[in-house]
Image (cartoon, rainbow, N blue to C red; front, side, top):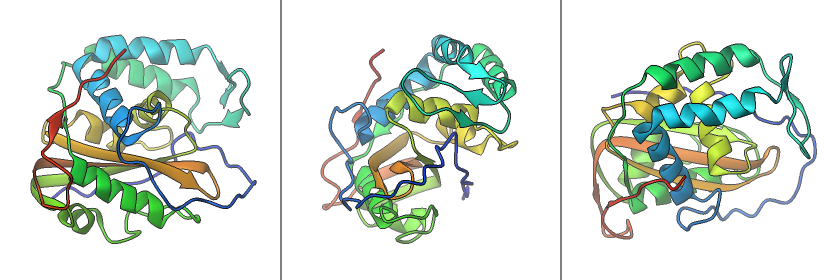
Length: 224
């Protein structure tokens, strides 16, 4: 059973705190909703060469190790464009993967994970480990994995950051997104007291939705 690693990927180290709403969003079509995150991961899986162009566009926004986006607070990365270039090479050479089916039950588990950390902190074990959380709403088979991202404003930003995996030599978050061992995923986003936003993504080799899961897993393809 795979055990995912966690690191803050391109997270803005904001010092401003706010009162966090503990409700996380698992479904919906918003730009940073759970379903939007799964769609975005599927776009990267099914069209990796096309997805490389999004990273190439972002590459021009670096000044040394600082990522400077219009209207946004600049923040320092660990590897700068080196990690971006490595991710672009990976995407250009990667073969397309099958889309991940979207799981309502696993998305509810991801929402629980986000809600458990709304007041601060980042841990894979918040509210139980990944396997126990996804088992609340169904039954998984094969291996499971999990990604967390903080401080991102859109599904594309979340997925790009995890593919680049700045500062993590193993690139385990990228591996989770592109793993052929996973066929189903769920995701959720929510507020975070330190980094403003948090997103959690759960992956599994297979998943049978339980009565509390909210319906069967469904095909969910990204829109460009």
